[in-house]
Length: 407
Image (spheres, helix red, strand yellow):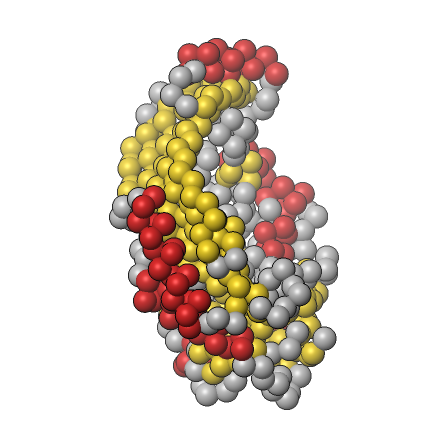
């Protein structure tokens, strides 16, 4: 029998903003610990909150073995590693003062807008996985997340757009420059360039344009033959320049997954060739896959296949070099879109900007975008820029040639 603990700690200060002013400040420290017991190919789990309750949780986990939850792979072991990234989080007083200063600057420069935020937060997020098979992993990541929604004073909408940064460092001037470019572009209405098919760019963290891979490369679907990509391992399906890989640390995630698998850099698609699906250890064992290091679990839940840390590899060109002087569309906000089961893609773009040389120069009308998965990541794939959208986040420009029309 092997006993394992999975601990999640969130130390965070956050501020809610309403009507261009700070509304409330909250500090919290939440510690959750799951206790797992492995025996005879089964898994028993229980959990507790805070500092007290380890012995009782271990007893309940042992009792839960009677439910015969299958886990034939066994726990990870014989690995010790600890990684700490980022500096110190804001104190409550410092974050309150910073948000007030940012809002004051934006109210002065852009009085046409009302700003709000579900959260501006700073904190340290710790995960640890430890067992008596020699596994001892710990990750502590300090993050600052500044998310602001905006609407015009004259608008009847709940929101007209947003801007944000999320990273391990913060600089007021850089953030205000990014916010200022977005708000100034929103004030300048521009027509859609002629052509029908145009370069269209997204933030490379945008899940909308990658969601088909999240569903069709799930190990169980892929291995059972129900995926659009089933049976195509080793075939070149996409552009030579397209590589999709596991990027946990670049996406501010712990270097290990919920099963203790460390697979940062694991490739699902490499230079257009389909290599492997997302798979936790149990799914990998069933279909003879390799665990992808993306297993996910609640602190007191059974690990299962996840798809976090799914990133498109960037290339050597900057966004300016990629465009070569031609105008492009940047999609800031798109909801309601999806892929069909055959790979067709379509989405409205509620907020889109005209872009020149990597700069937002004006707001476009609402758009309708369409393509197909094999075109988007094949002949129409423009790539991911080497430079970031803004210096405080890891997000880059992800581009495709797409059919674009006004709604």
